[in-house]
Image (cartoon, rainbow over all chains, first blue to last red; front, side, top):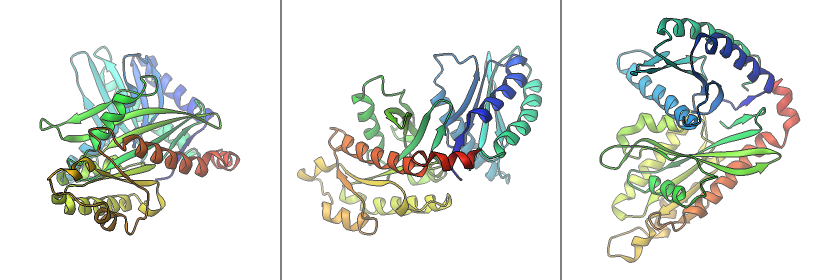
Length: 135
Length: 212
């Protein structure tokens, strides 16, 4: 795994893609993190009381833990995880090899819509970062 | 893997405290957390089991000022030391920039220290990292017990066991009392930041070319 360097333009492009696909659909917070648990970008309502550093670290760890479960049942990895809460739910999706997209949304947004938009986003974000920001 | 954010001008480094179970990795972090100014530290996150053992990791974010106009942020992680948590240990090492190996001075833990160091070397290899080329310091913890009747290892024995091949700087510590904790942190942060900075920030033109 090489070092990851973010350039302003690539980051801005990724953020605007996330904004259009998810934030405009009513999702309240989206984080793009890497697999080591670093926050690459955060979009939407970034409530001050939410500790995004901790959230990112735990989300990456969550993926690691479930990938061990995946191995137990003969899978390599799970590409998405979903946790449902009473009011807010959280959706994690793997993007390429290095990134995880964390989406937090309330029960007013349907899971199906989130999944659809995340799947579309996954391709476009991969394209943005493949162009040479990750070396 | 350090994360360098050019738009916010921030560098994020990850330092992992590694070592056998119950050697005092979490105690190190707790001491740092309790002594730091609240402006410079984030929230300490720990995932513990009921028996007080770290289940996943502890995480403590710190701010360390600026280099070349870049804000330096360090995240301190610990791993669960117990051998059954092999998978999580490997996971926490992902993207590591600097390492502290905490060794237990108790004589009964001698074998555990060695096993844990071997485990670290193997896990790093899993990410194509070589322990000899990474920023690393050793910490011999629980030195306060040396004067007690509990059988402990001498510094020479610890050096012989753990540091004969590595030849890195080692610190004596008593993490519960805070002795040696900041000395260890200061040295590893300095080494890690230097490692990340010489690798990237001091040659910005070259990196930018690659990035663009």
